[in-house]
Image (cartoon, one colour):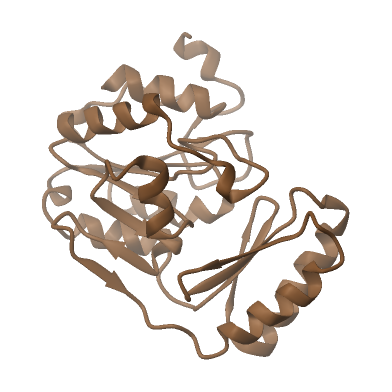
Length: 250
């Protein structure tokens, strides 16, 4: 696949210069295709091998920044990445393997109850609890309920004081706090990340904070998927294009 095949609407990024880069990668929609159910995303030898090789070439200046739990990131990536920000940054494991975790929100249980009560109307509505720090309502398999699902999530946020994280066919209620951009900044304040230019690669609106943070620190963002209004400067058309681009650098 040539670089020109990546370009539709926004410029494709140049090949990464790994010696000058601190690399931050989203998972779903970036390293792995979006699945109908979160549990359907499985380990993949190609992806695991690529990340292992990138980590070595980058001298460990590689982090995965995801909305998934830390346990789920490690399951899918087979534990091959040490530095991980999980649940949009509410949990962060640093390059030394030390884990930082926010405390639970006292009203999260109310949100879980409210989303489960909503989800009984359709088997395609999936409620995912995340390590006691957030709860997500997935409606990719029940898109006819999308409007009501978003309304339900925003109503519950108003009632509980939780933050609504809008996503691609998902609404997540979580404790207000760290974003993906905050996670990038925290990693960039540490070695080995601090010595290089940040590059954030992601697909969803949840990744916009990461794109903005990379730009503000002298780096750039790469959007994966369809063009939209974004803080990213470059775009790759698909997960396959993103993997191919990363393999070219590795």
